[in-house]
Length: 244
Image (cartoon, rainbow, N blue to C red; front, side, top):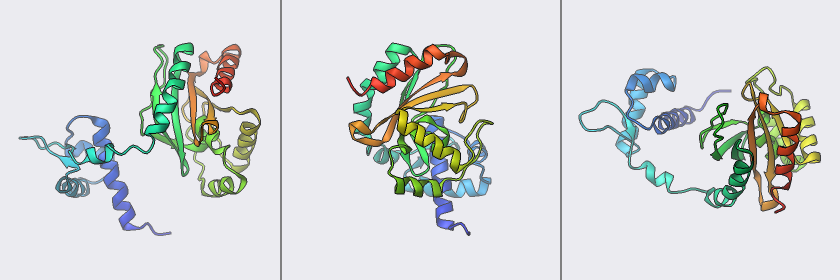
């Protein structure tokens, strides 16, 4: 199947913008091209187009690039503002009780996107960035949301899923994922043990009861801290989170 050149250019342009946004400071052409895996001529051409549109700028007397003022128009539109406002107190409650990293994510296509988080103050931690994404099938957040889908929507999602191992423990087959989803539907908790990042485990619960079936909240815990008693405590806290 041939790649649509227009779609390819859009992917590359957004890759440039996301890199500049994550950098938070002016970046030279060489660094940008290497980070997004483009040739310098291609990166320069796209950056120049984005600069003409106002999405990229260059500080005075500098050859480096920075996100431009027009990106503020996009940032001002947040379709998840209500969800994040609703979920923040829940994240805070879990964070205050357990001091583990808590995340809010939403399923979109075959990816789960992280919308918000509160980071643990403990030495061992796993840091995510809002806007970052992972394949849904190897995350507790993604499986918690996918478990809310009906049979037909889930079958469509499964047909679109392309499994790739992020760690030795990543789910690798539709059958294995189906078993995971059935278990999540039965218990109400999605579980991920070192499937997206080695040494990190997650437990998640859907926010379907609050009217957001595509969203979920998780707690990320280093494997060495997830002892049986701790796991039971976190599970119970997530299951009762939406009842109070």
